[in-house]
Picture 1 (spheres, helix red, strand yellow):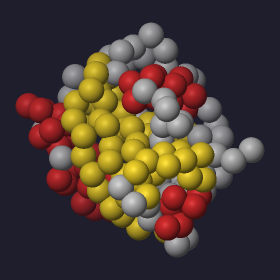
Picture 2: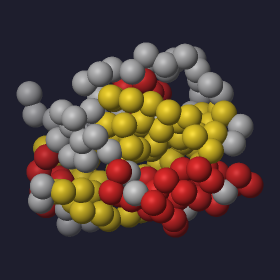
Picture 3: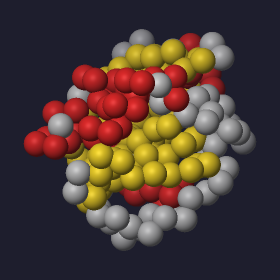
Amino acid sequence: MTDLIPAWIEGKLEPVDKLEVHRRGLRHPAISVFVMDGEQTLIQRRALGKYHTPGLWANACCTHPAWGEDMAACALRRLREELGIEGLTPLPRDTVEYRADVGNGLTEHEVVSIFVVEGRPPLDPDPSEVMDTAWITLDALRERIAATPELFTPWLRIYLDRHADQIFGALA
């Protein structure tokens, strides 16, 4: 089965194979979710079997919407699939765009709908998606990224460097 996601080709959204989108660096929509408990945010370490950025730390979850899928529904789906989180409402925060090399000849060029979830839900991570999770303050996360940036996904580094105010508001 082909994993088709929306991508802009000549200014129009078209369904394109996910791997092809990243090989060609096509601009495409995505979601990114931050789970916040006060000043702490949930981060996850991506499973080693992921096709890009395996073993790196990222925010709670990210993905691409399926063709025709609503962004909020996509955020709910991915919270459930990756982390086993249910019953919380992802609140839309902002839309940001970035382009980053994610290794192995792949490029993310995403227009990202950012969502924030408040609370500390029970977690039941899917081991094919997530190898570890941790709660960390934003200040401690910034310190860890500054000390060892190679351990974190490009998008998490970009979010904290360029978009923290939009995502975290007063906590940033």
